[in-house]
Length: 284
Image (cartoon, rainbow, N blue to C red):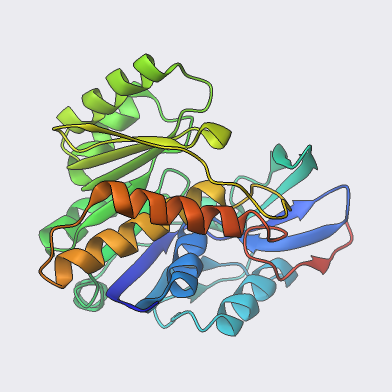
């Protein structure tokens, strides 16, 4: 299915190194968003960020090009690309260590007036708490483009209070929290500014809140589990693309239907090795 939506992932890119296999896969929240949007059927999908010039950076670039992701506003600099080391236990990703985003952790993507003209071409910009884009969000907001943001599972109260007022769609992971506790947290985040807030719960699915009601969506069966690397990213991506598409077509977006569609897409992604494939062997 095709959706008349144009989206941009802004921020992180990494290689996820699977130590038990010595295979690395391209990934990163903003990159995954761009790729999943394209796979899900978005009309236009782009990524904007900083690459290193090592083998890892080149692999992410070539993989994105193979997926036909627009990269015209990316920057490549001399240095090590972001990388994390992981393993998989019982189908779940287990994080081991990272290089703190490599060269991307030492510099920031500062949006110019020309970058903002480019961004105005899109219906939504997605970023996250590993992207180092916090200072740029107000610029995007002033440009009139909606923002989606992934707070993951480790954002502090102070971080939410700083970032959430600049966000339209907020996502986070709460797999270790009780349902009532999650509901309270979603209501609090919504009070900070986002119109829609969604918490993924791993095998328990997700809970969302739009200021009026809560939505519960169970995780759907996975035909053949590979790993859960891209489960949360694919869920939020499919939700956003389907939700925004309905809005653009002048329809009332049914949040429950969009969440169910997103859960189905996430179950498919769990059958792919890595976040979205393209594994290559590496040596330490």
